[in-house]
Length: 385
Image (tube, rainbow, N blue to C red; front, side):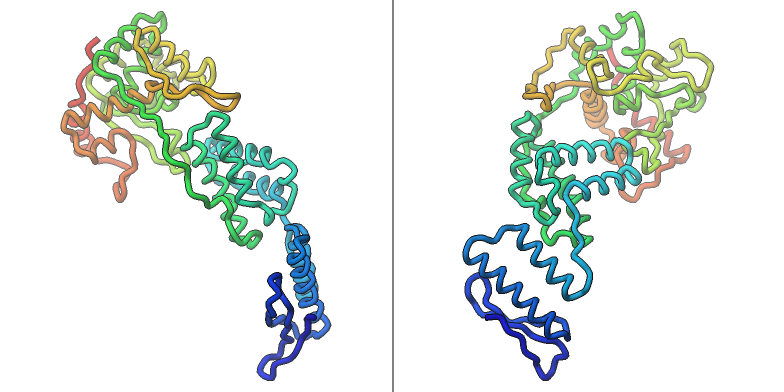
């Protein structure tokens, strides 16, 4: 039977009760009110008896703790459902993260809540590691790679870290061992494939895909950033390019690089309006990257037209999975960086030219630095079409 007593050296009542294993336990109730102290240890013992009888469930345990806290402090224990916490967290990310990152977080969390079903309306403290593991299994079954699933799990863990800091949960059940890396290996274009690609692009009625392909090879930049380039992004006198990549947009880190001599010759030959806001590739500037008629799909069709055989690294499975090809526009970035490496360009200058962040480096270059980078960039072989 539970009981309470006073210790001479403490102002608080101490309690004694038998736990779920029948072991006599003692604790300080942290209250000077005998009635509250006795009610607390009685609740502990009542809950322990239910556990010994196998009748204790998570909700009962949480409710018991809540009543004990309220009786002791006068304030009920704060409850937050998984759904309400997730909604608030996503709203916060929409205000502090880039649009792309917030969208990705929102998509992952919505999928997780849908997977939880009715459990999403329970207290967040009732979330179990089994919920996270079953979510991972469902995502894999839907055809997603283990690396994509690991990224999704990391997003859930980040959300739960915030809940843990607020004291809503004591353990982050999404801090689980990552799945083995099954990253599919993608490659760059060979010299002969690059020539085939350019010939096919030059044969197009519109020259925009030819421009895009050359920009991809000579800059190593990403397809979405290149498609949105306008005349003002090129300094035609100094032969430099400056734009804000989507990936570093929130940090405000622009890419400022020299333009390869062969690319500059090609760009000068284009019929581009004098309007500084005029797009370099009018038919592509408003296209999305993904989608059936997006930039990536258009480029894939050009690769097929060129007669380049592209291996399928992973077939689509279900409605969520997607087909992954071994050679896409990002292959031009691989070709660009590999070409610089083979030409003897240093690692640091390869990073500067391709837009990778360099620890401790400033983001603006002097005239001398730009000219040094120009010499390095022009070591990249010209396209032989």
